[in-house]
Image 1 (tube, rainbow, N blue to C red):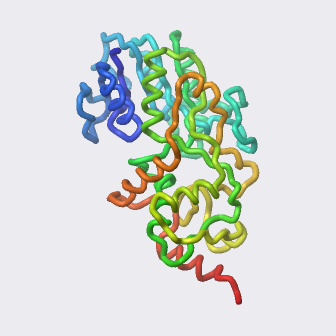
Image 2 (tube, rainbow, N blue to C red):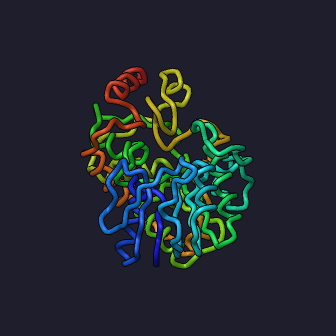
Length: 326
Protein backbone atom coordinates (compact mmCIF):
# COMPACT_ATOMS: atom_id res chain seq x y z
CA UNK A 1 0.00 0.00 0.00
CA UNK A 2 1.23 3.48 -0.88
CA UNK A 3 0.33 5.52 2.19
CA UNK A 4 0.61 9.25 2.78
CA UNK A 5 0.64 10.51 6.35
CA UNK A 6 -0.02 14.23 6.57
CA UNK A 7 2.25 14.99 9.47
CA UNK A 8 4.00 11.87 10.59
CA UNK A 9 6.65 13.49 12.76
CA UNK A 10 4.62 14.19 15.92
CA UNK A 11 3.19 11.71 18.40
CA UNK A 12 0.20 9.97 16.78
CA UNK A 13 1.17 10.62 13.17
CA UNK A 14 4.65 9.30 13.83
CA UNK A 15 3.20 6.18 15.45
CA UNK A 16 0.98 5.62 12.40
CA UNK A 17 3.94 5.96 10.04
CA UNK A 18 6.03 3.56 12.12
CA UNK A 19 3.21 1.00 12.27
CA UNK A 20 2.74 1.18 8.49
CA UNK A 21 6.47 0.84 7.80
CA UNK A 22 6.52 -2.15 10.12
CA UNK A 23 3.91 -3.85 7.93
CA UNK A 24 5.95 -3.27 4.81
CA UNK A 25 3.97 -0.39 3.32
CA UNK A 26 5.46 2.40 1.19
CA UNK A 27 5.04 5.40 3.50
CA UNK A 28 5.48 9.11 2.75
CA UNK A 29 5.21 11.74 5.48
CA UNK A 30 4.50 15.36 4.62
CA UNK A 31 5.18 18.00 7.28
CA UNK A 32 6.97 21.26 7.87
CA UNK A 33 10.16 19.57 8.92
CA UNK A 34 10.36 20.97 12.43
CA UNK A 35 10.95 17.43 13.73
CA UNK A 36 12.85 14.52 12.22
CA UNK A 37 10.72 11.95 10.36
CA UNK A 38 10.72 8.31 11.47
CA UNK A 39 13.06 5.81 9.86
CA UNK A 40 11.93 4.08 6.71
CA UNK A 41 9.68 6.80 5.27
CA UNK A 42 9.99 9.21 2.37
CA UNK A 43 9.80 12.73 3.75
CA UNK A 44 8.35 15.71 1.89
CA UNK A 45 8.46 19.25 3.29
CA UNK A 46 4.98 20.80 3.17
CA UNK A 47 3.45 23.89 4.77
CA UNK A 48 -0.26 23.13 4.93
CA UNK A 49 -1.14 26.71 5.79
CA UNK A 50 0.10 27.72 2.34
CA UNK A 51 -2.53 27.65 -0.42
CA UNK A 52 -0.18 25.57 -2.58
CA UNK A 53 1.58 23.82 0.29
CA UNK A 54 0.86 20.32 -1.05
CA UNK A 55 2.12 21.03 -4.57
CA UNK A 56 5.12 18.73 -4.09
CA UNK A 57 2.70 15.80 -3.74
CA UNK A 58 0.78 16.52 -6.96
CA UNK A 59 0.65 13.80 -9.59
CA UNK A 60 0.83 10.86 -7.16
CA UNK A 61 -2.17 8.69 -6.47
CA UNK A 62 -2.18 7.23 -2.99
CA UNK A 63 -3.89 4.09 -1.80
CA UNK A 64 -4.75 5.94 1.40
CA UNK A 65 -4.09 9.25 3.13
CA UNK A 66 -4.09 9.65 6.91
CA UNK A 67 -4.81 13.15 8.23
CA UNK A 68 -4.79 14.31 11.86
CA UNK A 69 -5.32 18.03 11.26
CA UNK A 70 -7.64 20.20 13.32
CA UNK A 71 -7.66 23.07 10.83
CA UNK A 72 -10.59 22.96 8.35
CA UNK A 73 -8.66 24.91 5.72
CA UNK A 74 -5.82 22.41 5.75
CA UNK A 75 -8.24 19.51 5.29
CA UNK A 76 -10.15 21.28 2.51
CA UNK A 77 -6.94 21.92 0.59
CA UNK A 78 -5.84 18.32 1.09
CA UNK A 79 -9.11 16.94 -0.27
CA UNK A 80 -8.90 19.39 -3.17
CA UNK A 81 -5.26 18.77 -4.11
CA UNK A 82 -4.52 15.11 -3.34
CA UNK A 83 -5.53 11.98 -5.24
CA UNK A 84 -6.33 8.98 -3.07
CA UNK A 85 -8.50 5.90 -3.05
CA UNK A 86 -9.27 6.27 0.65
CA UNK A 87 -9.13 8.81 3.47
CA UNK A 88 -8.49 8.12 7.14
CA UNK A 89 -9.31 11.18 9.19
CA UNK A 90 -8.46 11.25 12.88
CA UNK A 91 -11.24 13.16 14.62
CA UNK A 92 -12.20 13.38 18.28
CA UNK A 93 -15.01 12.71 20.72
CA UNK A 94 -15.09 16.48 21.20
CA UNK A 95 -17.33 16.70 18.13
CA UNK A 96 -20.32 15.50 20.15
CA UNK A 97 -22.84 18.08 21.30
CA UNK A 98 -23.12 16.78 24.87
CA UNK A 99 -21.23 14.55 27.28
CA UNK A 100 -23.64 13.68 30.09
CA UNK A 101 -24.21 10.18 28.69
CA UNK A 102 -21.63 7.46 29.24
CA UNK A 103 -20.51 5.54 26.14
CA UNK A 104 -22.47 7.47 23.54
CA UNK A 105 -22.51 6.09 20.02
CA UNK A 106 -21.52 7.47 16.66
CA UNK A 107 -25.05 8.58 15.84
CA UNK A 108 -25.18 11.04 18.75
CA UNK A 109 -25.72 14.72 17.84
CA UNK A 110 -22.62 16.71 16.90
CA UNK A 111 -21.67 20.33 17.39
CA UNK A 112 -22.18 22.77 14.52
CA UNK A 113 -19.22 22.92 12.12
CA UNK A 114 -16.77 25.79 12.43
CA UNK A 115 -17.48 28.51 9.91
CA UNK A 116 -14.09 29.29 8.43
CA UNK A 117 -10.74 27.74 7.64
CA UNK A 118 -8.86 28.46 10.86
CA UNK A 119 -9.45 27.28 14.42
CA UNK A 120 -8.19 30.24 16.42
CA UNK A 121 -8.05 28.48 19.80
CA UNK A 122 -9.06 25.29 21.59
CA UNK A 123 -12.45 26.72 22.52
CA UNK A 124 -13.68 25.70 19.05
CA UNK A 125 -11.73 22.46 18.74
CA UNK A 126 -14.83 20.29 18.48
CA UNK A 127 -16.47 22.55 15.91
CA UNK A 128 -13.27 22.62 13.84
CA UNK A 129 -13.07 18.84 13.80
CA UNK A 130 -16.75 18.64 12.72
CA UNK A 131 -15.91 20.86 9.73
CA UNK A 132 -12.93 18.60 8.92
CA UNK A 133 -15.12 15.49 9.17
CA UNK A 134 -17.69 16.96 6.78
CA UNK A 135 -15.02 17.78 4.21
CA UNK A 136 -13.55 14.29 4.23
CA UNK A 137 -16.94 12.59 4.14
CA UNK A 138 -17.86 14.69 1.08
CA UNK A 139 -14.60 13.88 -0.73
CA UNK A 140 -16.21 11.47 -3.17
CA UNK A 141 -14.22 8.45 -2.05
CA UNK A 142 -14.37 6.04 0.86
CA UNK A 143 -13.33 7.47 4.21
CA UNK A 144 -12.78 6.30 7.76
CA UNK A 145 -13.58 9.02 10.29
CA UNK A 146 -12.17 7.96 13.65
CA UNK A 147 -13.42 9.80 16.73
CA UNK A 148 -10.70 9.18 19.28
CA UNK A 149 -10.90 9.34 23.01
CA UNK A 150 -8.01 10.30 25.27
CA UNK A 151 -4.81 9.00 23.69
CA UNK A 152 -2.37 7.55 26.21
CA UNK A 153 1.02 5.98 26.46
CA UNK A 154 4.68 6.79 25.88
CA UNK A 155 5.12 10.25 24.39
CA UNK A 156 2.02 11.78 26.03
CA UNK A 157 3.37 15.30 26.47
CA UNK A 158 0.19 16.47 28.22
CA UNK A 159 0.85 14.21 31.20
CA UNK A 160 -2.81 13.23 31.46
CA UNK A 161 -2.13 9.53 31.10
CA UNK A 162 1.21 9.61 32.89
CA UNK A 163 0.41 11.72 35.92
CA UNK A 164 -1.15 9.08 38.15
CA UNK A 165 1.55 6.40 37.80
CA UNK A 166 4.20 9.12 38.17
CA UNK A 167 2.56 10.58 41.27
CA UNK A 168 2.19 7.18 42.95
CA UNK A 169 5.83 6.49 42.08
CA UNK A 170 6.85 9.83 43.61
CA UNK A 171 4.50 10.59 46.53
CA UNK A 172 5.39 13.42 48.87
CA UNK A 173 4.11 11.46 51.86
CA UNK A 174 2.10 8.39 52.77
CA UNK A 175 -0.93 9.51 50.74
CA UNK A 176 -1.73 10.79 47.24
CA UNK A 177 -4.43 13.41 46.63
CA UNK A 178 -7.26 12.02 44.49
CA UNK A 179 -10.84 13.14 43.79
CA UNK A 180 -13.45 11.57 46.03
CA UNK A 181 -15.56 10.58 42.98
CA UNK A 182 -13.84 7.22 42.61
CA UNK A 183 -16.58 5.84 40.35
CA UNK A 184 -15.90 8.49 37.70
CA UNK A 185 -15.84 6.71 34.29
CA UNK A 186 -12.46 6.87 32.55
CA UNK A 187 -11.22 5.54 29.21
CA UNK A 188 -7.81 5.62 27.53
CA UNK A 189 -6.57 4.32 24.18
CA UNK A 190 -2.88 3.47 23.87
CA UNK A 191 -1.28 5.42 21.02
CA UNK A 192 0.34 2.25 19.69
CA UNK A 193 -2.98 0.38 19.52
CA UNK A 194 -4.72 3.32 17.88
CA UNK A 195 -1.95 3.80 15.32
CA UNK A 196 -1.91 0.12 14.38
CA UNK A 197 -5.67 0.12 13.91
CA UNK A 198 -5.61 3.30 11.81
CA UNK A 199 -3.30 1.47 9.41
CA UNK A 200 -5.77 -1.43 9.39
CA UNK A 201 -8.64 0.88 8.45
CA UNK A 202 -6.55 2.17 5.54
CA UNK A 203 -5.70 -1.35 4.39
CA UNK A 204 -9.36 -2.42 4.52
CA UNK A 205 -10.75 0.92 3.31
CA UNK A 206 -13.24 0.91 6.15
CA UNK A 207 -16.00 3.34 5.18
CA UNK A 208 -17.84 5.26 7.89
CA UNK A 209 -17.58 6.86 11.32
CA UNK A 210 -16.19 4.94 14.29
CA UNK A 211 -15.43 5.77 17.91
CA UNK A 212 -12.05 4.60 19.19
CA UNK A 213 -11.03 4.43 22.83
CA UNK A 214 -10.35 1.90 25.56
CA UNK A 215 -12.79 0.16 27.89
CA UNK A 216 -14.68 2.29 30.40
CA UNK A 217 -12.89 1.93 33.73
CA UNK A 218 -13.77 3.49 37.11
CA UNK A 219 -11.23 6.00 38.37
CA UNK A 220 -10.59 3.85 41.45
CA UNK A 221 -9.31 1.05 39.17
CA UNK A 222 -7.11 3.45 37.22
CA UNK A 223 -5.59 4.67 40.49
CA UNK A 224 -5.10 1.13 41.79
CA UNK A 225 -3.38 0.13 38.55
CA UNK A 226 -1.20 3.24 38.63
CA UNK A 227 -0.03 2.33 42.13
CA UNK A 228 0.46 -1.31 41.15
CA UNK A 229 2.75 -0.66 38.18
CA UNK A 230 5.23 1.25 40.32
CA UNK A 231 4.89 -0.85 43.46
CA UNK A 232 3.74 2.16 45.47
CA UNK A 233 2.60 1.83 49.07
CA UNK A 234 1.08 5.31 49.09
CA UNK A 235 -2.64 5.37 49.82
CA UNK A 236 -5.16 7.52 47.97
CA UNK A 237 -6.57 10.41 49.97
CA UNK A 238 -9.97 11.21 48.45
CA UNK A 239 -10.75 14.93 48.63
CA UNK A 240 -14.21 16.39 47.99
CA UNK A 241 -14.70 18.44 44.85
CA UNK A 242 -15.71 21.55 46.77
CA UNK A 243 -12.52 21.38 48.83
CA UNK A 244 -10.41 20.93 45.69
CA UNK A 245 -12.09 23.95 44.09
CA UNK A 246 -11.44 26.05 47.18
CA UNK A 247 -7.78 25.08 46.96
CA UNK A 248 -7.54 26.01 43.28
CA UNK A 249 -7.44 22.47 41.92
CA UNK A 250 -9.30 21.73 38.70
CA UNK A 251 -10.11 18.57 36.82
CA UNK A 252 -8.99 16.91 33.58
CA UNK A 253 -5.83 18.87 32.67
CA UNK A 254 -3.90 22.11 32.99
CA UNK A 255 -1.96 23.64 35.90
CA UNK A 256 -2.96 22.42 39.38
CA UNK A 257 -5.24 19.69 38.08
CA UNK A 258 -6.22 16.09 38.77
CA UNK A 259 -6.30 14.34 35.37
CA UNK A 260 -8.99 12.02 34.01
CA UNK A 261 -11.71 13.46 36.30
CA UNK A 262 -14.25 16.23 35.68
CA UNK A 263 -16.41 17.78 38.39
CA UNK A 264 -19.50 18.41 36.26
CA UNK A 265 -22.38 15.96 35.72
CA UNK A 266 -22.91 17.34 32.21
CA UNK A 267 -19.43 16.10 31.31
CA UNK A 268 -19.50 12.78 33.14
CA UNK A 269 -19.32 10.70 29.97
CA UNK A 270 -16.72 12.86 28.23
CA UNK A 271 -13.90 10.31 28.21
CA UNK A 272 -16.05 7.33 27.27
CA UNK A 273 -17.55 6.21 23.97
CA UNK A 274 -19.31 3.17 22.58
CA UNK A 275 -16.59 1.37 20.60
CA UNK A 276 -18.65 -1.61 19.40
CA UNK A 277 -18.13 -0.67 15.73
CA UNK A 278 -14.39 -0.20 16.07
CA UNK A 279 -13.85 -3.48 17.90
CA UNK A 280 -15.92 -5.32 15.29
CA UNK A 281 -13.60 -3.71 12.72
CA UNK A 282 -10.45 -4.98 14.42
CA UNK A 283 -9.56 -2.48 17.14
CA UNK A 284 -7.70 -4.26 19.92
CA UNK A 285 -6.56 -2.40 23.03
CA UNK A 286 -3.90 -3.65 25.41
CA UNK A 287 -4.44 -3.93 29.18
CA UNK A 288 -4.40 -0.63 31.09
CA UNK A 289 -1.56 -1.98 33.24
CA UNK A 290 0.75 -2.19 30.23
CA UNK A 291 -0.06 1.32 29.05
CA UNK A 292 0.48 2.85 32.49
CA UNK A 293 3.72 0.95 33.04
CA UNK A 294 5.10 2.15 29.71
CA UNK A 295 3.94 5.75 30.15
CA UNK A 296 5.58 5.79 33.58
CA UNK A 297 8.88 4.91 31.93
CA UNK A 298 8.36 7.88 29.61
CA UNK A 299 7.49 10.15 32.53
CA UNK A 300 10.75 9.26 34.25
CA UNK A 301 12.74 10.52 31.27
CA UNK A 302 10.59 13.43 30.00
CA UNK A 303 12.42 16.70 29.41
CA UNK A 304 9.56 19.20 29.24
CA UNK A 305 7.22 20.14 32.12
CA UNK A 306 4.05 18.13 32.54
CA UNK A 307 0.90 20.04 31.54
CA UNK A 308 -1.40 18.23 33.94
CA UNK A 309 -1.40 17.24 37.59
CA UNK A 310 -0.13 18.75 40.82
CA UNK A 311 3.44 19.78 41.49
CA UNK A 312 5.07 18.48 44.66
CA UNK A 313 4.43 21.81 46.39
CA UNK A 314 0.79 21.81 45.32
CA UNK A 315 0.40 18.23 46.48
CA UNK A 316 1.85 19.10 49.91
CA UNK A 317 -0.44 22.13 50.17
CA UNK A 318 -3.58 20.11 49.46
CA UNK A 319 -2.53 17.31 51.81
CA UNK A 320 -1.87 19.82 54.59
CA UNK A 321 -5.17 21.62 54.03
CA UNK A 322 -7.20 18.37 54.05
CA UNK A 323 -5.43 16.60 56.90
CA UNK A 324 -8.10 14.74 58.90
CA UNK A 325 -8.60 16.22 62.33
CA UNK A 326 -8.06 13.96 65.35
